[in-house]
Structure formats: C-alpha cells, structure tokens
Amino acid sequence: MLHAVHEKHEKHEKHEKNGWGSWYREEFYPIQGTVFDVHREMGCGFHELVYQQCLGKALSKTGFPLL
Image (cartoon, rainbow, N blue to C red; front, side, top):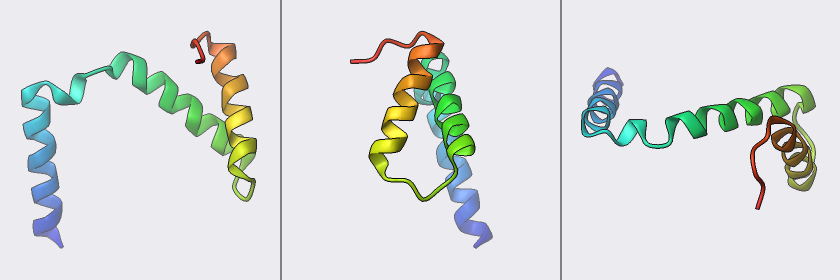
C-alpha cells in the first residue's frame, strides 16, 4: 500500500516539474471551490440536474462565464 502511495506522489512531482500541474490552476481552483461549496450546502441524494442548476447559479454569482 505504501509503495503505491509513493508511486502516485512521484507521478505528481513529475507533472509539477513538467508544468502540467500548474495549467489553468488560477481558473480551476475557484471553480473547484464553488463545486465543493454547492455540494456542502446541498448535501447528497439529489438528481444530477439539481446540482447542475445550483452550480450554474453559484458560478454565475462568481462571475464565471457559462456556455
């Protein structure tokens, strides 16, 4: 088990060194935070469409453009 965790950590470090881990970080982290906020507030057990609608409203409040 520990060996597998170490391998994943090495892969993560490799991506960070290559710059892959930093792609779109400034854009992605606020979106990810909003997703977590919606899930934390809503809880679990709803249909996906309910989460999509709530996430859309939350993202529009933060100023993210929605397609």
